[in-house]
Length: 536
Image (cartoon, rainbow, N blue to C red; front, side, top):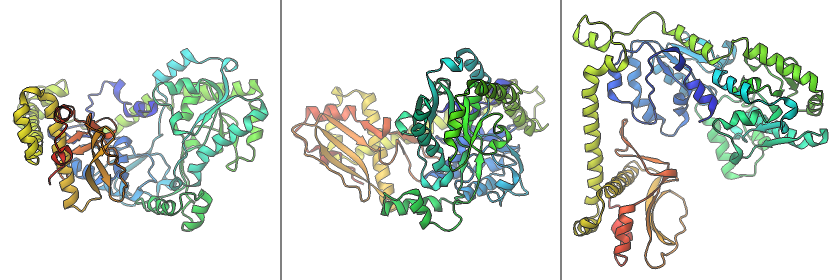
């Protein structure tokens, strides 16, 4: 996870609040519906599932939120992406507050359903974290001692983010090309493999006297993903199309929006005392041109002039000091200030402890969430665990039932097989079978093939139309593998169910059947491809 995302996610941690974090990647625990919360916060890391292919499963799994009796606060980002889906979803959930990245005029095309129903405010995409600022104070070198003059990282965004999306990497490429002529040393890359995650990002920002960049956001409004689909279709026909050629094939005005906002990296540059050369813009009202950053026109025609300004070390240092004092030391854009704004939305209503609400007793309010929910939630948890175990056990046993030859072999060889690896193997075989059955019933695009490749038997999840090159195994197979990487890293134990248990296939979607590999090695003459084929 990027540092700025984690800091944004955990903004309330330092205020003494009792917080339950629900990882939406897994189905929500049923006991959580019994808790009377003071507020529910829908973070951007949850709301971004609206453009995921499995969005409808998330939509059903969290539909119970519409029945909670407290403020529901949404913190969306990238609101221009699947904008209509976001607007409708937040309306379904009964969201009471939306903290948008944009002002009222800019966000008006996005929220037609919520307009007049929810209270809108404005939030940044990230804030200055005090721990990060303290780290920079301790580790930042004086500008003259830094190894580089300009640093930058940016990915080449897909064309459906519009001309503004292209600008984010174009300024990096242009700076890298022109900087040597000004005697400036650079560490600039737009390659995905050079992306920096974790705490190393701040060290990277502090390694340069300056960083280039542009506002976060997009110049396209994609209401339901139709822009993305249309551009993908064009590129499937001709992958060599440039952005300008795609632009000429798109409807008039598709790239005419200005959904721009300040990025967390701009605030990180402030606390790192790193100067900024930025495409001119509003930067959410936080940064001012020629005061907090060196501006560049959107066509980059004056980039050489901006690079030359870096040679005036004294004026650049004055600019970074001004940005540090007015943006950071003012305290206006810190994570703690953002947390206080969230708390004000909770209102004066306090949640009724579950114990009192259910029993009617007049006992004092519980001091912690664990005490508050203990009377009933432990029962829910035990029942939920038992139900899950039973369902997964049924999945594992069904895999044996689909393979009678394998069942007979397991009965003969049971003394040579370790039970835990076998249970893991059978569970994933059962999940594979159910996946295959669901795909066939629903006329889905996936199928499972058993192939012999080099020294391995591979159960490969393939998309219709994929070409699978398989080479005949030479002699005995040394491994049995399920390669689900083209479809994902997880699979549902009960596909199609809104609260299906998700089973991790393995790292990167590849799982090695350790127990079955041992059987294959002991009985190399058996027709293993037929034995392991899912008979669904």
